[in-house]
Amino acid sequence: MDWQIIIAASIKIVVFVFLVTLPLVAMSVWAERRVSAAIQDRVGPNRVGPAGLLQAVADGIKFLLKEDFTPDHVRKGYFWLAPALVMVPALMTSAVLPFGSSLFGERMVIADLNVGPLFVFAVASLSVYGIVLAGWASNSKYPFLGGVRSTSQMISYEISLGLSVVPLIMIYGELNLSSIVQYQAENGWALLPLWGEGLSFKGFLLTIPIVISFIVFMTSMFAETNRLPFDLPECETELVAGYHTEYSSMKFALFFLGEYAAMIIGSGLAVTLFFGGWSLPFGWLTPETVDAAVPWWHGLIHIGTFFAKVIALILFFIVIRWTLPRFRYDQLMRLGWVFFFEIALFNVVLTALLMWWLA
Amino acid sequence: MAIVVKRPKLKWWEQLYIPGIISGMRVTLGHFIKIVSGRKKVTMQYPEEKWDDQLPEHYRGAPALVTDEQDRERCVACQLCEFICPPRAITIKPEEIPGDDKWAKVEKRPKAFDIDMIRCIYCGLCEEVCPEQAIFLRKDYAITGTSREEMVHNKSKLYEIGGVRVGLVNKWNELK
Image (cartoon, rainbow over all chains, first blue to last red; front, side):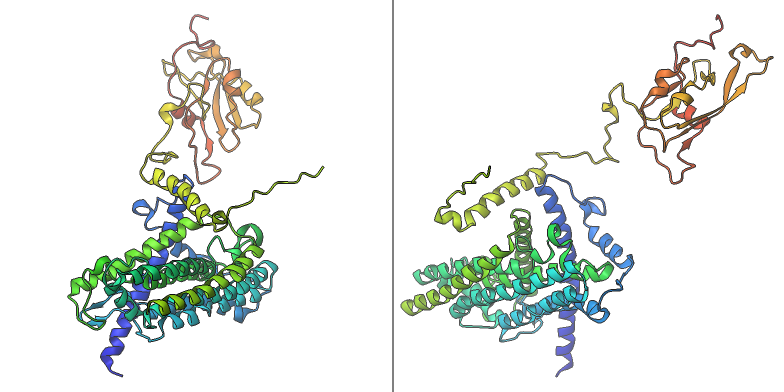
């Protein structure tokens, strides 16, 4: 392997993961608190820095300086392993997300795999191990219940999450996320087919299965990231804090940040699949091909577009959290297995029929 | 008697939950927009914005001793406030006024006058009971300190808070 490739990849990893995604995680915690405060007619954290923007720094310092307490009754090895197993998969999935077209001749994606969505699902489903280990190793009843709930919930919703993407992949005929974005830039976003080839009877008709799979995908994403209305693994009113009841200090912070990182990467995937990734609407500033060189300011605009879309989706996640009440556990399971699984399967068949009829 | 709660039968579009989610989001986003646009104010940003000029006349804040217009301390150390104080926050050490003093007829004055502000319940009984109108509840409410000793207001501190009051005096009156 060439040195230049390694250096370029490392720079992309450092910048995208550590200088963009992690601060975005911290900022989304701040946004969550401010938005929830505004929704509930409160003020929220507004003391540290302008409008409370440095609250994340204060929180980080607090997490680092707190006593890292390991209770006596836990399984030490697994107890220490679990927080890392939540955080690492969440960040690893960012490897395949194209967060921009290209900048200075360098493609703005860390690893341009040809199995993008599959890689994301494969790695993201690993984070369930972290939660199970946390619940089990804590050797205490509330974390245990939280861990058990989380396992069944994540396994159930992974099925509909995976199946909901199949219609899109059938339509794009492509598993490479960069090519998917390029296709959408040329032919209209999946949910907004208003230019290119999308602006046709076929494009409009295919929006029906796409909307269905978008609803299934987003709901499953809420369940996968343990966000309200599906936050049963850690619901405060029943399980104290669920699987991270016994954790303190930085180990707790890793769970906390892992959840938000999963949310950001999930939003990134939804943006890439349904909202045309880094591309601007109506095909503005679209590069000729995936590999075509673009001026550096086009590249910067594309990166900005991607993150603007991601942030909008994160705000949607936050507003939903403070709008909907928590589901009961049997309702959650029923919704996952009886409705979404069937809807996603039916949607695959529907897409196939539509594509066969339109071909 | 058991009451059978009638469950509403949902229409098919209601069972989709999506109209419910949208109307719920209308409520939450309505609140959000009202707060963010500043059309609704919820609370006062305390240390920067204060309520002081709207405190009512009868507000009971920290108790304090007052001096009169001739710069004499009004307190005659009768210790009525010390006795009536329900949480026993007041401690007075009286002192005799020497016979050659101009005001020897007043007999007593406080040598030390301490109010423990950790104990004080701001009930105002000391003010009510004082025959010389020497102790008043002022409008100071932010009494803070980093140690127990700091929270005890001594005589000089109490006069500093209290300031000057004009008007009725009994024992300090020259004519009586």
